[in-house]
Image (cartoon, rainbow, N blue to C red; front, side):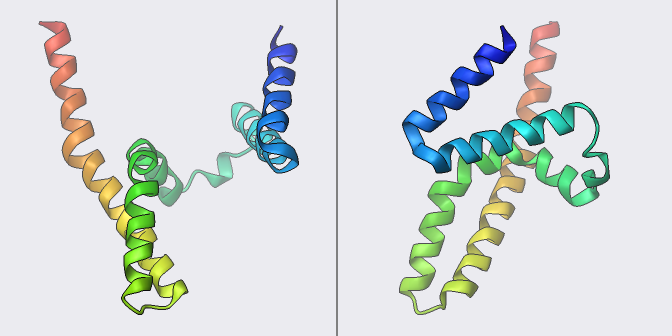
Length: 116
C-alpha cells in the first residue's frame, strides 16, 4: 500500500510538473527516507536546527515578503545578487520574529487553554 501511494505521488508530480517536478519529488522522497533512517544526522548543526525551527514561519513569509523585497530592491537600483542576499536575510529575520513572538507564545497559550 505504501509503495502504491508513493508511486501515485510520483506519477502526479510528473503529470502536473513534468520531468523537473518528478525529479524534485524523488529528491524530497530520498532525503525524507535518509532522514528517517538517521543517515542525515551529520547535517544536524545549529544552523540547520534553527532553520528547522523557523521553517513553518519561513514557509509562510518567504514567497510574498521575499519576492516583494527582491522586486523593490532591484527596482531601487541594487544589483541582483545584493538584492537576493538582502531579501533572504529579510525573510529569515521575519520568519524568526514570527516564530519567536507569535508562534511559540500562541502554542504555550493553546496548551494551557487545552489543559484547563
